[in-house]
Amino acid sequence: MSDAAQPPRKRSRQPHLEDDAELGRYDDSAFVEHPSLYYDDGNVNLSCENTLFRVHRSIVSKHSPVLCDILTSNEHEDRKPDILRGCLDVPLDETKEDAEVLLKIVYNDFRVESLKFAASELSLLSSAFRMATKYRIEPTLTEIYTRIQDRWPSVLDQHYKRSTIEKTLGVRRPLIFVRRPPGDSLRAATSTVAKGRNDVPQATTSMHPAHIIALLREAGCNDSSLLTPLFYASTCMSTRVGEHGRALEVLPPTDFARYVRGQERIRSYHTRVAVLVPVADTLGLPDGHVNQCFPAIKSFWATLADVGVYSNTGEIFATERDPVEAWAAVRLRLVAAPRPQICGECNQRLISRADSIGQVLWSNLPAFFELG
Ligand SMILES: [Zn+2]
Image (cartoon, rainbow, N blue to C red; front, top):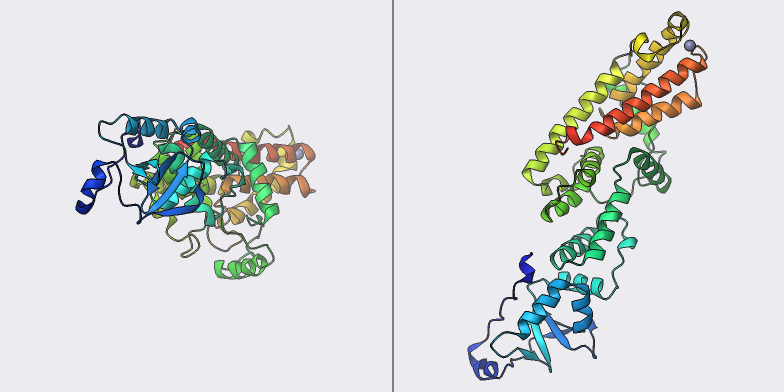
């Protein structure tokens, strides 16, 4: 049970109002009626800071069992109830902004489905999530969890679909293969890449997943299927100073350690499989194709090492911050532009290998982040 179920703190009364207090009244001149959440036909006041909300007792009680308890316990107290402008007044220990969001949820003026998880929506989402948790407004909480899962799915196919949508919307930069020129330096490769980058749509600022992790943790969430994609997405975000402020600082210390260790493991696995050419036996090449196709397979795989380490933004792993998606891109490349020296059957083996690496990476994420 949350603290909110306890009777609210009593408003401190001023000494010269003692007589009025005895009569259950107090000076109301300090209160300002909320411009939209003060219903003339309401029958109970909720006050926060110096703002007065007038609401319908039956409506708030129906939506929130916690508010229902607060109103009931206030009524049954021994002392006379506080009356303000003709109605029972119940002070809530919330900021005016949080109370606004709480009542917008109650009165259906807050639509969870309209959330885009844009950076600008962070304070709204935080308020809504905290209020829905504290006041146990289950339908809103369920909707928020569903929206989070839609945006950061735990199923790999849905993750791929999601990243395709984001590229279409310009939220995510498309993955571009840039091969490091043979014998060239990293610096030269990065300048080539930087030019190419201007051609892709600029990413709009989306909310950093670390903020969602922090909110979920505050509510006591330990659900690995919800948290894992958020941790993974955090490692895919830019760490450039200024782009996401100090988002990672909101992570609880143990989660920050998970983020760091998980990222290390993901990148270590990704580099290892990108750099090591698979052995012919493990690819399961048909008889005779070791001589026929394997040399071209080795040469193809050697290009992946470049892709894995030197990415389109020129920083090590800057693109392969989404290494799972990088392996889907390898598949696309094999499907769209198969090498003539590799037969169809062997090409299919390579496609299966890329798929399997992406799947293994994805299924290992809970263990990488120590969430499983
Ligand atoms: Zn072959």
